[in-house]
Length: 382
Image (cartoon, rainbow, N blue to C red):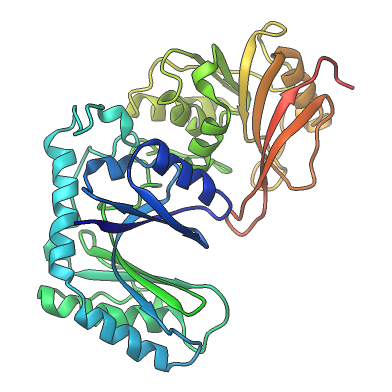
């Protein structure tokens, strides 16, 4: 029996999520929507929890057509929720996460726990416990004559009833209790999807990231950047503005033999990065306090650079970059070998001298529209 699943994603990296699904052999990609990748899997197992570029992974319970802008759509969604088999899907989610917890060092395909996002197997029950009730999170594209809370309440009560559980509404800012079984409803054009989250919490909430700092990078975006850098061919990988360490921690799974180096001008950031790396079992990463305007590495000594530089929004440039932000790119050009690759998260209109642009991916992230730029070092700064 085939199961339809949905991987949720940051807007803009849906194709990268689809590519990861194909590369990992998780199933056949059936379609891409706004922030969603649909794929069909014949035997869903704990490998689904290894999607590093996805924000979340869900099992589809129902696809409902004819969802218009009027409030009559709420009745259609309620009927669909009433008719689906919530009990069977909940048991399947328990089975998937239970397999991951029961066999933390070996997965069915012969892989290891390194295939999973760091720490996904640690702490708490394998799945949101049945005693916690039912919660629903909804979203839609375009204007509607109803709110996300109307959708959630229309679906949630119907899902909870056959399970014998309370429904916890999010209306009026209420927060569902820990351990609730999490469902999601998404509506695009005239089609709605009702789906059940597989893990107890979204995949983007990496357990290693217990500490953070302003401007820290979203882990699935960091994982996507690491994938774009083709780290399997890298000897030395640098992040000169490492912040909380997310980029290099996500890179570790793709570059087990590479030398990973992270610098930051803020000693607090370096402390947080090292602590997060320890929780992620990524102690081999080298961290240090250094000014990104004078990177303490020899010329041409780096194969790849992954960087989320200060944009002067959440984080202002400091040290030498406060006076001359362009020093960062001159220093990256200096330490990067000819033909080396930079993957950077930067404002849309930005273009650095001395680099060719191989690819630009437009994102929507925290209400802003940055780009992930894949750059190659030219022979000179130009």
